[in-house]
Structures are given as C-alpha cells and as structure tokens.
Image (tube, rainbow, N blue to C red; front, side, top):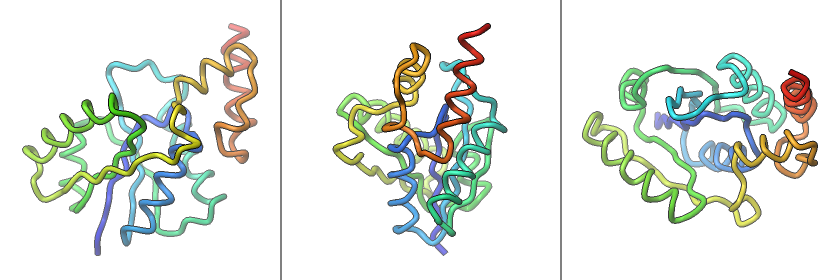
Length: 165
C-alpha cells in the first residue's frame, strides 16, 4: 500500500489545501493529512480545531482514503513512524519551491524511504493562503470563495470573536 503524508499548518484549511488533498487521494492508496506545528507561525486555531476543520472538509468532499492526524515534531520522523512512501506538498509559486525544495532535501536525508511529491496548485488558487484568508476575514471581507463552505461559519465566528477581544 502506498501511503502519503500531506503536512501543513492548515490555519485554516483553504480550497487550495482541499485541491491538493483531493488530488493526492487519487494518487495514493492512503493519505494522512497531518497538522504540523510551525514555530515561525502563531496559529489562530488550535491543533484540535484544525483537525476538526480538516475532518469536516474531507467528509464533506466524500474522500474515503484520507485521515487526519497531528504531530509536533520533525516531519521525517512522522513519515518514518507511519512508514510513508511519499510526502505531498503543494506549490503556488517559485518562492514556495525554493523553501519546499530545501525541506525535501532535508527530509530525504533524514528519511530516504519517502519521496517528496510536489503538486502545483490550480490556477484559481495560485494566490490563496491561510494567511490571506485570515487577513481578509479580520477586516470583515468575504472569504466564501477561499474556504470550503462546510467550515465557513466556524472560521467566520472564530475571527469575529478575535476582533472583539
């Protein structure tokens, strides 16, 4: 069985994330979407909330070979622990590639049994990021074109509460 890990911070999950997850699910027997800790980011949603959002999105999309997990450590260690054969990463632009290429080489050194597979984003999601979604929503902008509709109320409510604080 070919198992892939699809890591990210998913804070919050966007239509771009869903696109990559859906496409990865067609390439591999099983995909684990893993919420990772990124020390350079201050997340809005907790690990548990992000896992819940992802689970709801995956169920709503009807993707049966994808599960959700979280991990606070090195991606290579998680991939090794799960015996993954691939790490799937989405790419939006050349700037993404430079960073992701560096990470892919590091992960290969730490766990050579898993290959990093890059999936380019769909054109309509080229500009889309979780940071952009949060910024637009924080200023009251419409984000329904950026996030799956099944989680839009939860994201909007969380950002509304953040503005009130």
